[in-house]
Length: 65
Image (cartoon, rainbow, N blue to C red; front, side, top):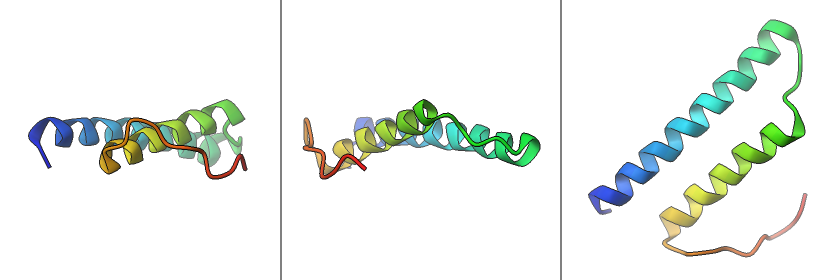
């Protein structure tokens, strides 16, 4: 894996990890589930990471749910 690609992967993973930590903290402290938009945002970041790792420009969605 090239250094540039590795840096992009690390950046994506750090963002996803931070978002998940914030969601987890909200559940632990307040007992509140994250908003659907927040979850969709993290899922989109995970999709982007997968595309980066697979080397594809765009992926078709397998399913909507």
